[in-house]
Length: 232
Image 1 (cartoon, helix red, strand yellow):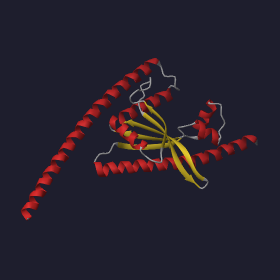
Image 2: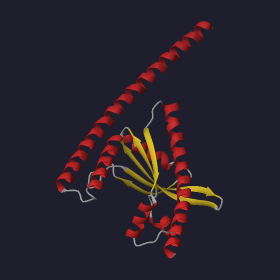
Image 3: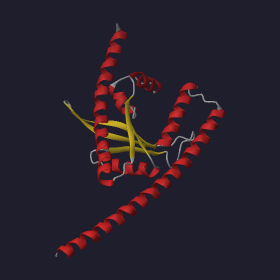
Image 4: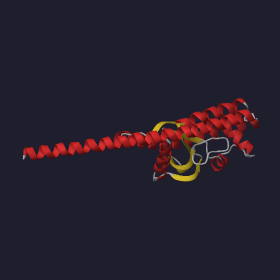
């Protein structure tokens, strides 16, 4: 009977959790979508390729809390786990990552709690990404509460490498053989080189586009001015 009561309490806690973190994710996703649309409409350039989000499963959260020696309670969840809700933003180029970080920092109702730049300084494994832990105000019937969300921002190349590492970790139950670890690190170096070259290429293309737009604008202004003089 006691076991059933505990399970019921866990289910209730997880439902409360899902409601709270889903609301926080929706708010962030909407803000990111607005930024995305602004760039598409006004700047003719989109730094965001795509966005994904997720909420950790009850099993995954339980596993994390047990590792910390804690029970599944609302208080323990909110205080000790930062990545229950997560958003991943995928970009084309490295400079886009820092552009998006800056835009998130400028969101007035979003508070930055923690930053980790694994782009400038990758992890020992070769993992590269930019991590933010942010606080999002969520309005519920009981009042407004601040909810933590983890944001990961990375390029497509970084995401490809991270996805491969995750699959390898799962296959070897995180006990990756040394030869495979070495190969992963080599792949990470190649990914970093590719990202730098692609970012350089992208910057050159954008500069050329800006120059073309500038020339077209100047030509249009000349034609318009000539038309005005002729009409007068």
